[in-house]
Amino acid sequence: MVENDPNYHNVRSHLSVAADAEKIDMDELDKENVQALRSFGIKPKQVELLFVTHLPTDSLVKVIGWQSEDSTRSFSNYLAQTSKNHRYWYKKKRSKGQHLVHAVYQSPNGPQVGLVFSSPNALNEADINQFLNRDVRFSRELFPDLTAVDCVPENQIGWGIDIPAELVRNEHTLLKIYRVGDQEEQLILYTLRNPGEFYYTAFSVCKDATYKVVYSDLQHGEIWSTQMHTDDIIEQDRLLMEEMGYQ
View: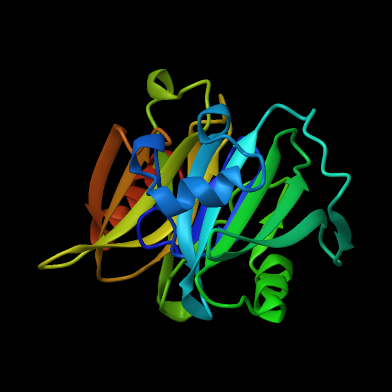
């Protein structure tokens, strides 16, 4: 997850979920969450717990995400559902006072991915199916880039960023650009970088502002960063063009 991005992303399964999700570990699961998973035969210690969130249309409906490389689980007693984007298995039930739905996907990159919905009230299946069809996606491009460049093209400049070649990791990494204000830094763009990807990249930013770029691992551990005002970016480009013989 990336701060200020409303989506949850997972590199391994190529999963994106449009939800304000929180990463969760086994020891953070409450009793109801554990019961909801176990009611569908999912043992929390045998899967990777991804996140917990709420259905956007009903804050009482919890959504727990999990994934597993073990593809031997059978969902033959589930209903097969097909949307324009996905095929998934679907089952609803009641257990210990909870109304439950379980949706299971076979991701294009291997792992099985499941979403368990639970509520003390009757579930609105139309809302759940809308969430599954609109807000859950598997993309071979992994992360969509986030961009919030809020100025017209005439007020934008290109910023060429050279990550030190010796620091480029042979693993998935993140490149994040923040607009630096007096009180805070606002994330305006991020992109997922593939293992060993070329160290140079370029993005558009707005004039008359200060920006900070951070190259990090997927846990947001900083590898490298730099900060520049756009006046300095323009001057840097001018000097480079001059060196190359352009006036």
